[in-house]
Length: 480
Length: 140
Image (cartoon, rainbow over all chains, first blue to last red; front, side, top):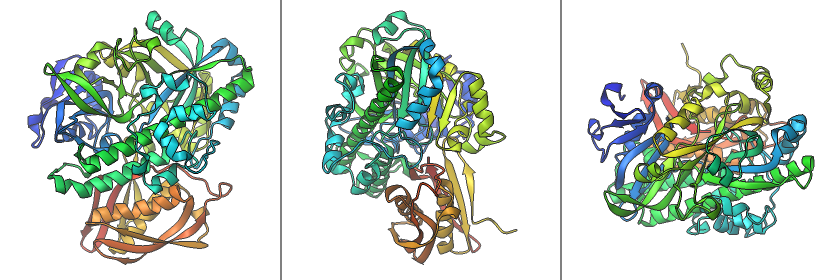
């Protein structure tokens, strides 16, 4: 176990674990956190995992961890690792089983005052129209050959096939599709697991929330993003469903077998990796990008069903537009200046969000002068945040920030001493209606199971990685 | 005191299963029972059909992982729920067996959670004085 005496404080928000305390590391680990949160982070294996990542061949800069860090498999959740694109490795564990798990924010031409009196009607309509929960099957019909097209083209394919409107896909990271996707690298099993799941929410920590803008911190950025106080928004949190899970499973197995060939040893088999430029590495990236496109298509499908549900209740004039969509489990090829040299890198974000600052060419024109929108969901019944990327992220965190509040309690501990009705009533007393397919969906995700989202956000804001734009408060929660 | 065939382990984000058995074959059956218990109520499933199961791997830990992935495939890939899983033959590198169950009927079968994957995280299979113990974590 790592103990506090081994960790060096750089400033109030940066804590360094020197690589030399563990054999096999190539670099140090840097944790963005406060001292108070660090004490709780030390309770599990997440910092050991951050040092394990520092052992991966070709890692550039430090192994990074965001304030929402918690124990994952292989990589910690909340971890960021950049690899040299020519000489480094790619690790499916550094992306995770839920490839392109991410968050999309929809802005509605409605206010809290419009929605409050008809909240129950709205929540029930969305709950009926957006398939969720275990075994939830979608209403997106795919003919033969359609799945491969969708894997190649992502969210724009959905819009072109009637599941969305013109501008939807433009306001997503990578335009909702990565061109380098290779559907032929996705196994038949993965395709079968994903068939029928486009436009479905899933279970676990995935959710759809109807929220309102409670507070604006940065009026200029809020205006550019089209956010105003009291406005109703919808936050969608889901990923690539069974398809992505199977792709990760397939490649972890394949890479465990292939590592020997490349003389790679890792401290945890869940960190299995191969050179990016190897046939296995290229094959994984093709499949991962296809899975990422599946996830963007999935969130596009949910957008379509949500928009219809809102318009059924409030009429066709209740415009619903996509504000932005971010991936928080992904590996992306990006360029950064490291030690005064421009480098071509593969940035693994395992529970971390891209946060490009103002002026970056990847940001849609409308937002480019304020920075890339960063969407951070809180736990059920607490707040979520909209931020924009800041210069600090470009300088030191490979354009990355946190991805959520970060779990603190195990699922069993979360359920202890609580019952569904009690949790439901406590949330209703705060004006939040909850609908869930399963009891676990509510009990395991109680707010007490997570870190304080406000504290997590303050760390990335104060560390200069991103700037707070708006705080969102839920009114209706739909869980799998 | 005798141990239960499996028990659930705590993990911050996910869930683990510790399985035990008097033989490697029993261990693999009990680990599968643990996985099924996490995913749904196997008591509500009728064992009226069977599906063959085969897994291979270079070592015992990977063999358990691949075996459980085959079981998970039935649930999440085929929509077919095992009530129980039996091992017929097992070596260090290959296991064969059968799952007995039925196709999922949403009216009768309540799934508890989607198990995304079986992981290598802290995966272990060991023998202690004739008793086998395995630990495996599931991503949910």
